[in-house]
Length: 491
Image 1 (cartoon, helix red, strand yellow):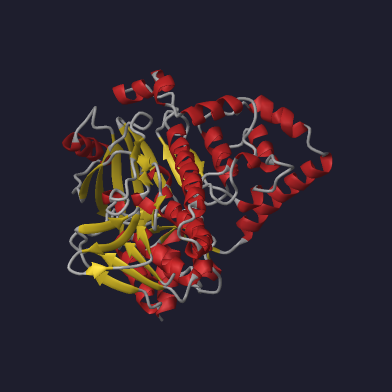
Image 2 (cartoon, helix red, strand yellow):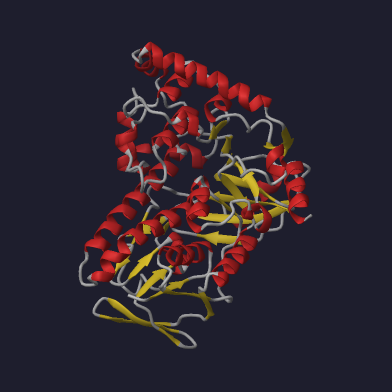
């Protein structure tokens, strides 16, 4: 095997090309993109996988700030979801396990602390360390908000620097023989040993190979979105805002110089014009819509067929509620990198594709379930929320319903989630269950009380030390720190 073609010039396609080239430097890697199609480009947020990616690609994690209009992100702030405001953010210090349980979270939840204490310090007072502004250390945040267009330019630059060929072409034909792609055709004929479909919702290659779409429309009724920018502000929060609306939810994401925003809604109840009017009423000023998007949430039944696999939006799309798009594509490509040598040694052996399909289907189910749980809300002030509250037996995914039954009287265990190929693990679920008021506090107290006294003392000491350490650090407000960092870097 010598050559790989990636179809698609969005984030997933370019990142996949970079990762494959890093893993297999001798491969000829080509990206085929079409400027006439472009990218979605409504702003993107990463999860903590971004830092791991930077390490793998041997690039400076600060480059995201320098080149991509990035701001820091430590998590997501949920507001107006029918429960008190809550936050989703994972602190590494709290992930220590006692067997398969999480005693730090047991302690915090037993004490019924506020969500800021569960998710760490930083949400209420957005700041960065003084040392980071001087370019002396990496950013504390493992996540970022990106200007999607600048991110795309940066990734294209990296591809060019690493001898990845970029071709401009719009594919109009896919030649399939005996279940394998022989070539793809546009202005010219493109041949490769292996193909990666990163063509987004068009799924140009996978649909020609017979992949079928599994719709999640029965589980997630949001199917439309408007995206719109708003002006810069004096300060940036250090999180993405996800605000419950009358017929869905709104995201607000700060990037350098402006904000990226959107309203995800169900078109059964309102149309694009009504969605715009609701946003303008909420914000108190007119907005200019950048994009109108219709989507059918779901995933492919097979993400690897023959000599082609799908990554990112080509494999599936739920909605941007938990910034899963980039990280899903990263995990899929890491999995591909692990399996590709076995397939290359025996292209008639379907073992690699079976593993890929199994793991990526599990990944998609995990994302569906985690997005769906956010709608387990007591809100019933509109027909949208009333339907969700009164018809959970109809729309809750079966796996989520079963898990909620298991977790009624205990927190999730670590072994319930694949440690490598699951996007949302036990700690993500614990924080969200607590934020939504779905945790039995008394049961958690009883479980924590069974922990050894030495462990309890260690946990209390660590929690105290974390508070002292963070409060004693020299810090700068978030936006001011970003500006100082950029001045220092450019100077």
